[in-house]
Length: 454
Ligand SMILES: Nc1nc2c(c(=O)[nH]1)N[C@H]1C(S)=C(S)[C@@H](COP(=O)(O)O)O[C@H]1N2
Ligand SMILES: [Mo]
Figure 1 (cartoon, rainbow, N blue to C red):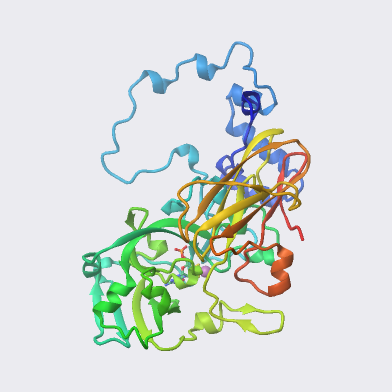
Figure 2 (cartoon, helix red, strand yellow):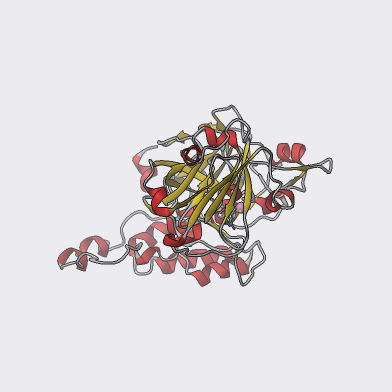
């Protein structure tokens, strides 16, 4: 890659960074017709008055006649006093980023009491999801629970039942770890061949944070849990959904399962389970019980309602797969991705995220020709177990149609399947645990679309 190709590079930021919220709605409403023009004009509007960017967008890297006013004229921010410190209050993103938001999927039924919001993966960098953009999934709405009134109880096969206040939990030795949480239903509608337009909606039910809390094993030991015969625990949430999930004791004795109060350096957000939630690394989101109020130690799985009716996978032979815990190896290219527009041929940084519920990501390969040829992507550090891993790959687009895919492999040797391989084993009637390879079609006009390649 030489300097010229860098200079002529123009990577379009995710359109959702530019468009107004009503603009987003129009993109979906317009469908195929006129969408590209709409995005381009939105880009033009966002760059209004910016002579140089527009010259670039038209394929002319040379500054307009008379020079670029944004270089020649000193702006106010370089010549006068800026604002004083925000003495009080919670810091906010730039007003120019106000369009970076969690959103409800246009592919799902809209209800008054929305129950899923998706993280804008196309606009995020690195591996951490800012807490205000973490996806949300509520079975019966969220609450802002008074921590002074919240209680956490341990019962069942223990020497003595115990009840903890938040203060008592926060006095105990804590650990902080980065982990992803992915809803088992992430990418579900694509399994049913519904191509939602952007990566926010195909893959946005995943987020990654640094969580802080007390290993559950510490609390079980305090209660004198029977770790020999107690093979499972039941975790119960304090909201109206009575969320209850069975967790195998082996995950707990390994020290991985946390009773957490911290997320990205501060207390959990209410929508993510404030003041206390269970962290079950590698396991589907539903087991990460929010507003955690009780752990019961038992000797068999509980077949709770969210295990016996929901969260089961219908297999080709008509049998159901139950207690599917681990989220298997998966990845997705976040740029270029659906809804974005490449304004011009030239250099692009293909970037994306990979993860596995079984451990670390070992490698990611990227194809730009629908899976015929593959190149190994760079994994950016840190590469952590059961956390998101960022990958990048240099690419020079020749202006011809391209199908971009990523295929991850984890440290256990598992490789992400194609849709054909996934359907071959698991059929077409599952909703949960779709970890198939995602394809983005870059059309000649630069528009990127969600497509399925068999
Ligand atoms: N108490 C409680 N815990 C819960 C839920 C819930 O509705 N209530 N939803 C579960 C589901 S299905 C998922 S995917 C994750 C979502 O966590 P988040 O909202 O922090 O992203 O929380 C899980 N824990
Ligand atoms: Mo979920």
